[in-house]
Length: 146
Length: 313
Image 1: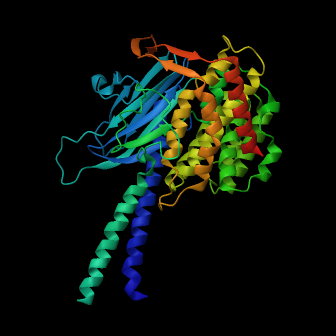
Image 2: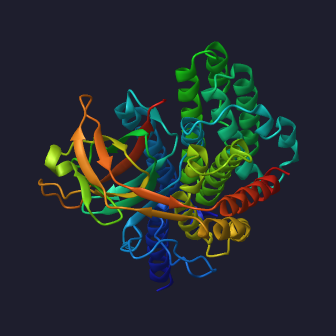
Image 3: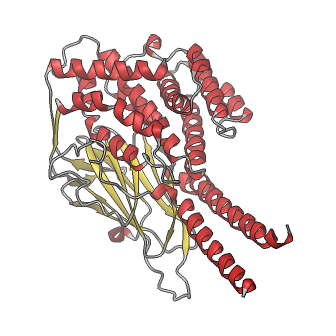
């Protein structure tokens, strides 16, 4: 039994660490990122993951005509401000938050329904460190009751 | 020598475990897969937004949540019809993971629909049944006693009730996604989305479809159907590499809906961003052409009804 002890302890530590990271991401999305949707109703969907500096992610969603939406993208403190673009099916960039001081939210309304792609990038921090930073990134949508 | 061998095995185990856990913590970022493996073909043409999908990136597919689905139907002019909701008594029949997940989505859309039409008592009953199903699925903290109390105290305040629905759905979906149950979370979303199509198509009934905002709304859900397909494709294999039978079965069940949507044409133009209004909301200007015949809509209604009846029975 003794000889397996290091394996058991390491496994327990890694599982606990993994669960803790996940729980932090969930808590971050619920407690901090959701606040960015104030004035809008959060749709209830959960899109969050641990991303590392330099990593990118994409989200595909259909947005419907007549509906007002708020897109909120938040990164945890360990990460530099998250960059994002909203792109249509013809690859036109409709919004680039780098042109707006890396603002984390964008409010929009559609004349007609469209599938859009949200491209998210965690930039590499200007401060050099031995390892790239990782942290939680959450993408949330709010809409307004009509 | 033996000691060294053990150390090497120990280090390898740690490295493998680390890779597994790192991958697990980012599970919501499953890579996109070629949708043609089990007969699903891409819906749209070369303008397809998925055409340049980068498989190296983390990909999220977002379907309208039950709350958004209910809102979309209401804003298209739907009226409230309690008879169309899934009977509360059916909840005891759901014994498999798949039926529980699909019906958690269905009941959440019904709950959202009742809430949007200020049906306080019905909302309370549907919240209760979603709590029951969520608990059976092991998501005990999705709707706790405090949430139920808050709901009872604010039954006549629609904003608070919507906030509670949104929060409880977030609790369920985050729990499932962070506990390696992406497939279950996908089934919950599909159930909720199909219920929205069902409620909408029931409310259209036999009304003419030309110029009908509600039937147009259901027809343009073809755009979300392509997201449904990709989301399910991404989940048809379990983390262990084993085939996910529930998902494969669901993909097959959706074939009639896919066939019906193929007879409906939805074309979108490029988007031009207009000036933001006084509240800072930008207007995205574009055209979407939706072409379908009355027969095609009837086929869609029949496919939705058959699918939904199959889910709730």
